[in-house]
Length: 272
Image (cartoon, rainbow, N blue to C red):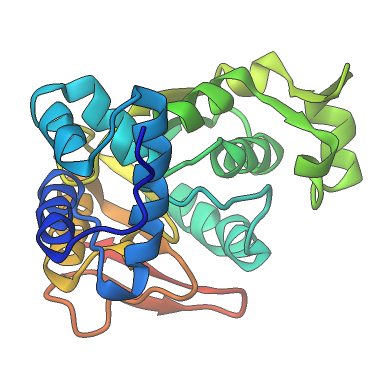
């Protein structure tokens, strides 16, 4: 099979448009090399000899299109990533929600959007198990565009190197030592529903109290970012909170979310 060394401009534009239309992810000349690298991998996997042939494949094969979109996403994550967000969740957001919902509900609905290999939703679940007073409960939906990442997340198994940053008391309480690493306790795993979801589409979720979508919209252009954020708005309850990445911002975006600054972290709220 001939080795693909670069994308012709016409091919790059064709792939760029397809990726944007299917996922909202934007490729520019600056990250063109990432696309080329991922295409090399997929061509080897499918035993194809040209990017044009592969484009024809993903244009008609929805499963391979999912595999391709999976391959171009970046899945950097870890337990308790950006600790300040979890401090704010514990000391501000959850107490505020319990106060607002007093007498009206005893459950919190949470979405971890772009959950990658599961460290974020498992972190949220462990924290909620620690801080929610009875009779309060929580339910978490965790979604990603990467089927490979979701499979890892559903297993709940992490190697020794992947559990760095987890406090000792959490390790003892929520993990089991197994061959080659650690396994999340079943009671925590049972509180999370992992599901494939492309943020370009409506999730169908409604009345969410907390949404985490961190370090995802940074890959979208302004139009796609606004569309995603407004879909979050539609999925959230009248009194709810949104966490995005520390390098992301809704500043200047046409959205109704309000900026919240606390001593722990900044985030956004929907209060209507």
